[in-house]
Length: 168
Image 1 (cartoon, rainbow, N blue to C red):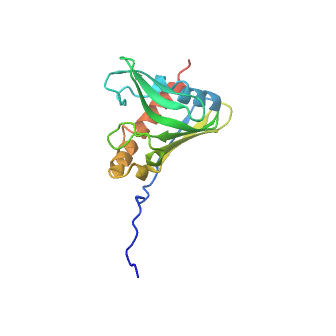
Image 2: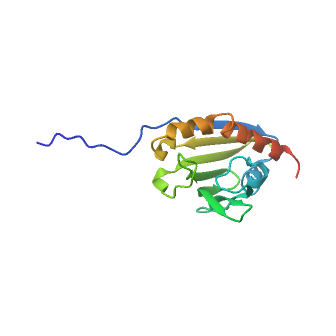
């Protein structure tokens, strides 16, 4: 009788990182600034390329790339759009591994879901959830700590809120 136990490659689930902000903008504008206006609010310090970033982009379609383009013209991917439901919802596969470099394997990507909830005609609640972080493997706890820290999603979403509230 074989009594060997089988091991799985699945890490224990980590708690999702969640952050919510309410902005003084209609839901359509909030979605537009978050996606098409991504370059206007994403922190310049948060880039993966070797050169300084020239722009940050999200392609508005399922399967679309999430990437940055450096001042040297080099493009660095960091994600893929999994769900595109304007103006209510966006899901991105986060392909940055524990070294903050692109890992193309979808089984090792976490997910960032952003929901845009209408609160009257001129306000929107933006609910962000970064989940399945354990898929990044050893070191995933450090990613969770980083994206949940002040310079992670809380600070990034606060910057988004400032930009979306500014008339274009």
